[in-house]
Amino acid sequence: MDVVVPFRGPSEEREGLRARLGGLALAEGDSLLVVDNTPGASAADGPVPVLADAGHATPGFARNRGAERGHAEWLVFLDADAVAEPGLLDRYFETPPAEDAAVLVGAVEDEPVGRGAPAAARYARLKGLMSHENTLGWDDWSFAQTANAACRRSAFEQVGGFREDIRAAEDADLTYRLKAAGWVLERRDGARAVHVSRTSLRGLLRQRMLHGAGGAWLDSNYPGSVPKKRWPGLLWWAARSSVTGVARAAVARNADQALVAVLAPLDTLAYEAGRSRDNHRPKGP
Image 1: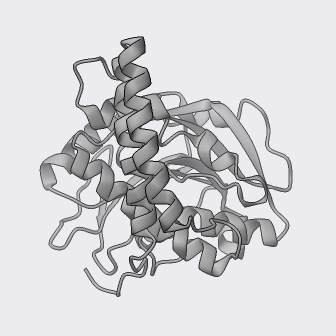
Image 2: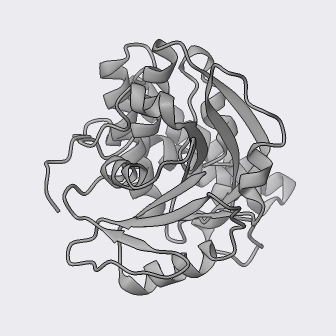
Image 3: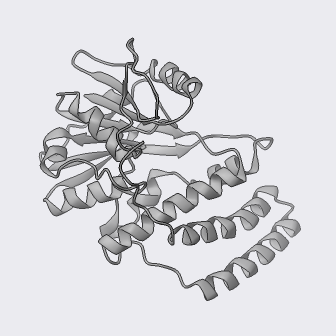
């Protein structure tokens, strides 16, 4: 298995990522590679090597460059902010995949946090914001999040890998093209990774706007996959939901319920506002 992790950011964060990935158990024939597409980044050797390539500042570009460097039958994609359990790779193959299975969907859960954690991180945990269950519940439009997923190399190469010109939703796009080619998804709930949550409200809302841009792009290219909500009704819902939710939380004396009542409408509004943003990223660092 070839494990590929895209990264973009400060060098100290990259070293923290390499330290975390060092705990991943590899067998003979497995490989692990971080692909850094930060402008000016340098390559690195060692147990967790780094390929530096700032040719296009998208996760799809980084993942494709990493995939090209390996030769294993399966590719495992992780996000830089997903912490995988040491035995992740073995967990993926506790059950042999069917011959028509192109993607093994690993489990993703939001970072466990205590009551003293920042509100954004607590909200993500309470809502299961990055859970793999979210995108597996889209019926015909279900897809695997590449925060933690394995892909059969032959299928990946058959459809041309990831699109490199979009900022978000490249994992959904890959899944849809694989499905159209006759491949299927299989769940692997035992292959677990924890998603490190945003700690600031600004960071959380920016993340959700990026997801919204990806959602709009998907609906444009795959009509009906991510329908747009109507803004007049949405604004009324957001205001009413927040007020009534906080009131109910006050009666129940439930701080978590109050937090969700305040942030859930903001979350939804940020996502829908993000739909107006361009999901394409011009080539270059």
